[in-house]
Amino acid sequence: MQAILRTLRFTGFTLLEYLRSARILLELIAAATFWYIFLRRSGQSIDAEYFFTVTGVFAPALTLYTMSAVIGLGDRPQGYVLLVRKLNRAQYLIGLFASALAIVSGVYGLVCLTSAFLNPPTNLTLAGWGLGTLPLLLNAALLSALLLMLSPLVFSPGWRLFVLGLIALAFSGSFISGPFLDSLPVTVIDVLRAVQAVLGAPLVPAFYGFQLSMTRDYSTIAAPVNLLAQLMLLISLLGLAIYAFSRRDLIFSAQ
Image: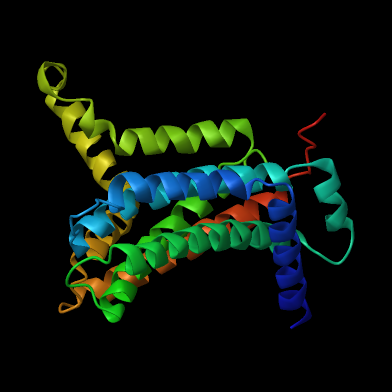
């Protein structure tokens, strides 16, 4: 219980520091601009699928900035002072992760409330809103955990390059195609496709989660199974980040 309370206190401290530094203004401006351009549509109604399509793109973009800013806030010599006290490294990372996710969720909530009052999507009930939001925020959490793991705070440059190379290889089917692919030996093509299939498997829950937020179709067993897969992948990424952070020496980015 004490460990949970310390983590919550650190999360609150990080959020206060984030608000005090006025970093939140960029998220608020981005949210207002996004809503005005994509969701206002004066005189026109928007449907639920369109709402979750555009917010499903906006949320990861927002997460990318917010998590990077929170990591920068935590990757400072004065932040490491907390680690010599009762706050351990796992609580430190979880606090940073929870702070970024709280900011993204709060900004997304403001976008939803603004849309609900000023231009509500058609055929979207409160329950449907929740069903569409759950996989969307899980995707935001997955991206936050990945960015945290790939940050200078956790991974060394060599490991970051290695993981980014694996991610690039998983997406290589998008840019290795056509005449270049046909020119490769059959064995190389088979190996490449096998590697892409293996590396692309962890990306399936995120892509299906995006689709699930648009359709909000929970009539099949695939929907709850995918939510569980998103949750398990999230736990795996956070666990790997915590393990890596606990195994490496602290490096002050300012030095």
